[in-house]
Length: 446
Ligand code: GLU
Image (cartoon, rainbow, N blue to C red; front, side):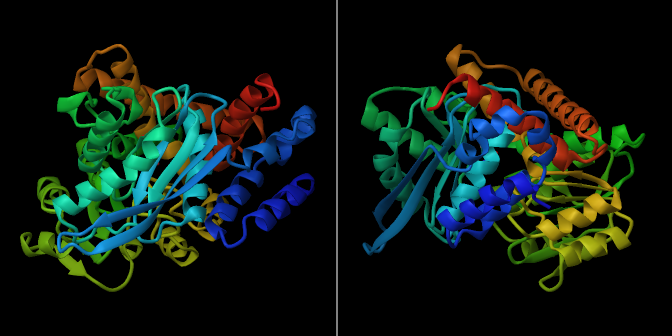
């Protein structure tokens, strides 16, 4: 429930942003936690901090024309929503997916602002992307699209201004083409303008693995707070992209057993435990489908009907996309005895499902805390770029684990302080809100 002092703010957000249900959902989820904060800090209402936070500082929408391999011309629409720069330069990924629209990017940029604050790094919040579908596109088509997009976007970027990275549909390959075009147009080898770069050309070790690994570290902390460990836990992970695959890898490394994962075509159940090397080969290197995995793994079963959440588990990690885990899925998971859920993707749990997990009292890690390891490691990449240094895998991973433990601690303590012990949604929303809003007040009315 939204506190009555904030219902007007929310109504105004809905009125001013029509047809953007995901953005409304993300805002509502934060506002629902903020009642007790306003009671303790009445000055924040006077400064209209919440109203300011709900309005992006700048929104850029532009045309991306490009030619496919047969010479046909295509027109896509791209976005960069620079949400908030109170804590540092705008920072957040780019998403290439046919479903992308302004509302999607606004919800992601809003979430990113709070997530980035939780990392403790000097990062503002932004998100961008395009309604471009990379599926089935050739290497050259992807390159031409990235070059065309950057030909407009470059003027809005800079290591002290706005620093994009990857998200769904954008990985090291795309960041390479984007960086190459930025470098060509500006005549500057400005490493710190993008993160998620290849390690051979000023990228950082662990950045690729960081979101998935970080989510698992967050689960480890949530379980430890309840006197549990990951050892022997049965896990289900949705998705089979960069986040999901590396979450599977770290779960296995920490002694858990991952019995199922999914992609946009279906899911596999592998009771003996997912073969991580085969999964990486099929999904990350060959860019194939999970049925190709099942074909090469005789004991695995591929299903193109039903939901991956029907597979019984102790720990569930939704790592695919927004609103993929519904109230019905939550009921199934709870019935099957699931004790922990952490969001590797951004807002993968519907509001109904999130409420059910919180009411059941299981450990529920919201994305802005649980998946913050990705952007935190982007900040580590920026540090390495600024000092023209590169750190070892072990050192960087230790930093990531430390950061995730600190985020967990912050959320845990804040939830306790505000009378909601064990509720990481409340803890994450309040802790990050306080951090951003104090900076906004300090910087004046800008
Ligand atoms: N897209 C990622 C996220 O959702 C990473 C953003 C970044 O590294 O800037 O946090």
